[in-house]
Image (cartoon, rainbow, N blue to C red; front, side):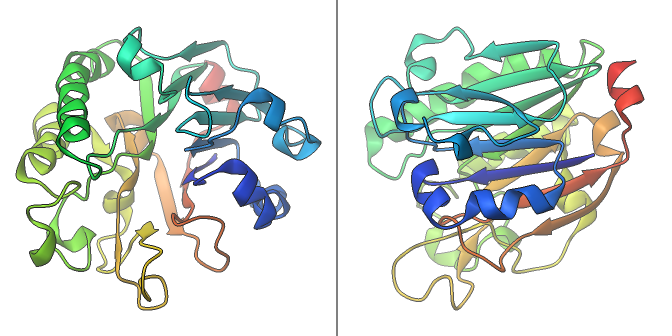
Length: 262
């Protein structure tokens, strides 16, 4: 089972950069997208509903902003949109599909880079998610949270960590939230379970030569409950083509359709 997550930074822009030409060859079972930034009337072209996938888009109320999507090869047993939090849901940041014993979420966490107000919003959402994530660990299902978390966890996860210690995305309280998620709660950073190498990034600034010089951040994740995380076999960050300022994060799991439906 192959799962791909990518912040497309505008799905129409990604389409122009040949994302939908690349996707069919990946043999993905689930594709999670963030920052789609398009309303339904802007997704009328067939490419936005790729053949062989069930598609679910969740859009922000504000046009040209945020938005998430999931493409699934299997018909979901259930699709859940949002978390019931008006301030979060109006920005189109959460969609979940349940397939058998597995729930996959496409999640776009807020960024705090635009100022104190948005940073405070980010912290509020992190706090509110704690009880939800605790429930995920105890309800008997397996979960994968896939998406742009907008936090680099450790020094290995960004190139210029010394200069970013006071910047959103690498603040102590943000990193402590991931410490809690992985070390205390017991969810798993699937990429790091498989790959502990340095300079493995998923986002690069469009300024300067960040992409060319690999001056990046690893802020995109697949975060799993222990059962599904233990089934992860290989992972990669795709950089041969550039569809966005983020790169696709790909993980292959040892999981059959029968297992998913049992």
